[in-house]
Length: 394
Image (cartoon, rainbow, N blue to C red; front, side, top):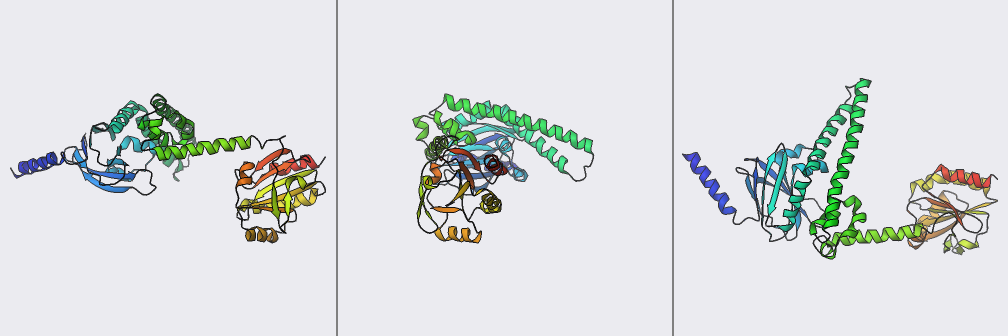
């Protein structure tokens, strides 16, 4: 009798709470389990706020008390021991977007460790949950494949396995599984891409570009319409647009730094404070060396550069262009490394780096007598020295 009364009291409490709580869940298969809820504030880089929820016959509630919108992830407490991967988390998690003051309901089930659910009273979450169901096959396939991958990797690296034939079988399985995962990822990505193309003004499309398609954001952000750009994800979309503009500008500059084209002129200060312009240097060949005292690979390359400078300096000049350095750091580095070729400083100014489309350090550019570009080398590479030999041994 007491047990029946207790069940009635608990059920009554849940029924009354349902009227007040922001998010009501009815997930069959959860039973009386404990769940973890994580709240990620939108557009803020910080650790999620984590809490626990207790279900009663699959019913539970969550009442966020935050001032800003955010994402909510809910999963069984037992999953805390699972090593999370994106493919796993999507299958094992209820993912929602919550806005201050918003109330909605989530109905679904938990079967074989996978959540299936739909959302009512929230346009964004309803559409997202329905689209998730449409993509369910790929989500499950990726989760299962990831578990198989982890199991095979553990077996493959286990120290007690010494049989080469068994290891080879594992290698073949891993290769096949990697290809399968890549194919499933491609198929899953195409589902999201198709949605974005067909729903350019949807807030969900903006979310996909910022999240699911983040690795391809610069490729698909252009499909988004005005409404999607002015919604919750507008700040992030603006950042992506800025990246796209910078990328296009970089490509335009790179198109001007190609073999056969004239190098852009510049004038910079030398070690003794005098102006040195590019076209004032008269040698058969000129190397522009973009470097910095803070760049380990730049410093490591100096001994071999000295060797080649001593070998060819009757026909070759090197102009070291110190970048992102203070005047003191630059001069100390030149003196410490006893570098005898010409030196100028670009200081902390990025204008010249942008003009020459510099993407990494060191960058070495070989010019001919007319200051036309022969070749560009990024990083410390043997190919640079082979090219000098090819040009100067004749």
